[in-house]
Each structure stands twice: as structure tokens, then as C-alpha cells.
Length: 190
Image (spheres, rainbow, N blue to C red):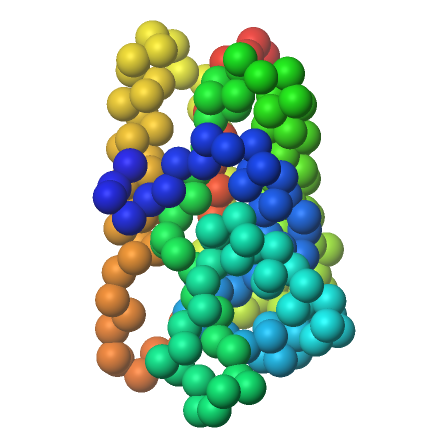
């Protein structure tokens, strides 16, 4: 974890980011940078009032903050993430039954969100998928590792993902679309 990452250890913060609209707002603020509620409402097709409500909840949880230097006047409110990367471990909530329940629910919602992105891609017409003939991929493997080796594997995969996610985009005139990627490694048997 880098200094810019935020490890969530408060179940109230975890619960605040669990809402699907809030996760989407966090994603948009990460991908596109600071924005107003109006811009985010257009991007999400949500009502401005609803987006404002969710932005306030994210701000109260410390996940976003106002960016007043971007406002053109006192009425305009810009929002930005407080950290580029959010992470949590369910193990951090094991001592608190309520926190453990929140972490379990958020893990489940997060997996649904992640697989939902893949399912929506698979449901798109072939004409849309043809725009990316080389790109989308799936990779799976069964590994035999210790817990420490699994942690090393996670760090290496995370470093590759972070390098691509945080790179400076080349100014080469090529159009770049957004791509969602996620990885999971869990103990199991075939």
C-alpha cells in the first residue's frame, strides 16, 4: 500500500461507500477527476438532488472533499476524492460483530459490482465488442502457495494494475476508452 492509499478500518466509512451510487461517484471522481454534482448527475443519469445527498454522505465519511479552488462562484461546489485508492480487509473488523457484518455485506456487494461490469460487457452487441478485438481478456489459474506467497502474488499483481491505472497518458492522438479490471485470489478447490 502506498502513502496515497487509504485503508478503511471504520465500519461506518465502509458502510458509507457501500451504496452503489456512491461507489459509482467514487469511480467517476477517480477516473475523471473533480466534478460538480450537476456533472456527476449527467454522467450517472441520477437526479442532482440525489447525487448531492450521496456526495454529502461521502464527504461526511471523509472519502471526498470540496475543491473550492475550482469553483467559479460561491454557489458552485466541486468535489474530489481524498485518496486515489481505497482498500480494506475483512479481518480488520473481526473483533466487532456489527463491523464484521458490514464488511461481509460490502465484500458481497463489491463482488456483485465487479462481476456486473463483466456481465454488462458480455451482454453488449457484437458490433460494440468488435471495437476491442484484442483487449478484453480473462485469466484464471490454480496456484499452490503459502499465505506469504499469496501476499507476494497480490502485491505483484497490484503493482502492475497500479502502474497502468496511474500512468501518464501519452499525448499521441490515439483515442483511449475506459476499461474496468479486477482480480481476486481466494483459497478454494476445483
